[in-house]
Length: 240
Ligand code: SF4
Ligand code: SF4
Image (tube, rainbow, N blue to C red):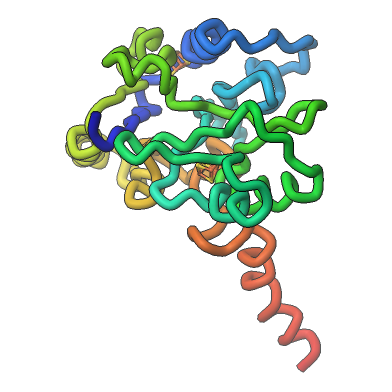
């Protein structure tokens, strides 16, 4: 097996949630108790049992528009979650050398305070924990891909939004599609393609899709440090 990646072409997503259901089904994750919250998005967030979530955002200004974002772990090339976990609970997070898949061990229990640091280190706010203090998130369907089968979300997607394959092929596909959509959407972009193995194509301000659509911090600094860098100069100005 070689270095793998996803390409997620959000311009083709219809928010049908087939990927979300396929992920639940294949990975045997328990259902969430949900209520109608006045939004198409359900459940409201990722959880220990929900690893793939189609985020639905309705933006009213300057005109009403809808943004669909099939969220999941980005399988970072140098995963900050693992860097923190290695110093707290060795073996809690491993990275497959061949594919690059970042996998949370279902056997390692984590202290709550250590988990907070691991979650905070993730630029995309992905890690979640169970009541038994075991972490959970997308595994890249490692049990499928090692047999040469597509991840469940990719297999289920009927629109061509979810793509998976060798990293160089996915990067090529993503850049080719970016060139195409830029003719219509001048702000189109790929979200952190050099840092992640789940590459999203977006055609508008990433914040309109989801708060963590692009990295809230650069790899190597935590979200708390990133926010401090933004707000510290303002505090210094006030003091001066
Ligand atoms: S997206 Fe977050 S949880 Fe996934 S590999 Fe990167 S840092 Fe870890
Ligand atoms: S299955 Fe494909 S089209 Fe449907 S919500 Fe998921 S990514 Fe979008």
